[in-house]
Image (cartoon, one colour):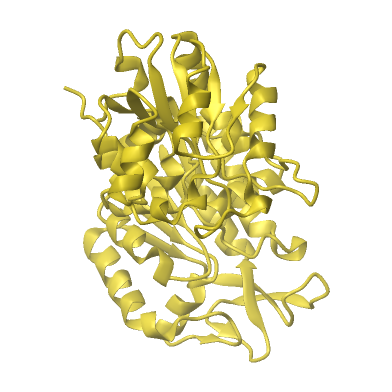
Length: 401
């Protein structure tokens, strides 16, 4: 476990450099269309403000690739943050330098400033030591609350943490580490993982690590068809990674050897086109005719998955079980989402959700976020954490004593 802002003493008047994740979507008029990530950092910012620290936020927006791209300025993010905080946010036009230092001198205890998009500097993503040093000159201590960027060894997420002391986690980071850590280390059983998505290749590490820890693992979405082809089934025009057929067969054997209940849809919804205008029908997942592709779990698979979920005490859900973005193909993912919510709210299960597509499904189906124990803000970071990898932005922080 890492030290958090709540372990700090006497920070009144001190300058806190706080790395946050406010990489939010904007519309054509530069209005924030989803403020979830901004709301997620409010507890840390408000805590530091109430303790009298001078809060200096560092964040990125989009992928400017080291260019000063006016379309990716943090101005609209500052405006939304100010609105949510209910107090002014001093937005700076740069991230480092004498002019920035001069403006930060004007901060009073409890004030909040936001540096310009940190990725306008190519040195940021290269974790350049000199750039990290210039960031460190702005503050007295460091807080990382950007779990979503913690798997990157960048100047503002890793480099600067070695130059400022103390270097601690924010409250969001602390919650992410606690929720994911306890889920993997001390889960209540039965422990079920639902791993979906189109490609096996992006989830190999996750699947291999989870197979050592879970009682049930549901593999859904496009990866279903790689497993079915590996078994010798016919998958029509369904997505498939032919170079992962051996991995699929080995995983089936490994799950059986470990006594893990591996669930892969035996029936699926198939379509003759990837659109809402498609003709659709159900069939066995290993008998898909040519010219058709699997797009969602079938009714028998949905029943099997939801029964397992509703009898689980711990649930990790990462990735949809179908192409839910298309209304005609949403039934399976919607059923999974509702089952996880029901297991949590009515049966006392602990549920942790991760991945952008999973969160998008919760939003699409208008499910209350409070129906789940924890929704991770880190896409790639949560995946790497579940894989058992070390996250550079976490490793660089001070350990609890």
